[in-house]
Image 1 (cartoon, rainbow, N blue to C red):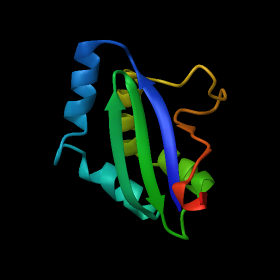
Image 2 (cartoon, rainbow, N blue to C red):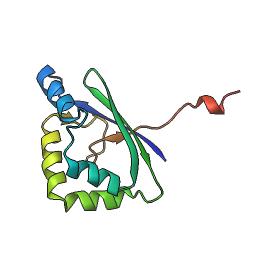
Image 3 (cartoon, rainbow, N blue to C red):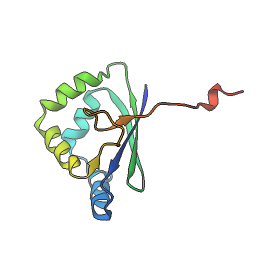
Image 4 (cartoon, rainbow, N blue to C red):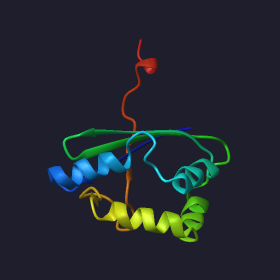
Length: 114
């Protein structure tokens, strides 16, 4: 299943550069990649335009968002990573109070057009 999620970064060039460095090829802490894969996330990409981030995430049948939240809360490495991200990420203004990333709603598909 495909998920499209959005979040903003602090609108600061240094914070944006730091975020990109943390996500550069080979920079992700192994425990974070393992946690993502263990949740049956089969692919993930993050794109940036200005200070807006868009995450494309593909998940397998074993992906359970609620179980991922519980597992992340119990994983010290994930908690450290999330605290680091909290310093530069900002939920969208219309995000629910408990949300960090906000899931986008698909409104168009070329496959559904004549």
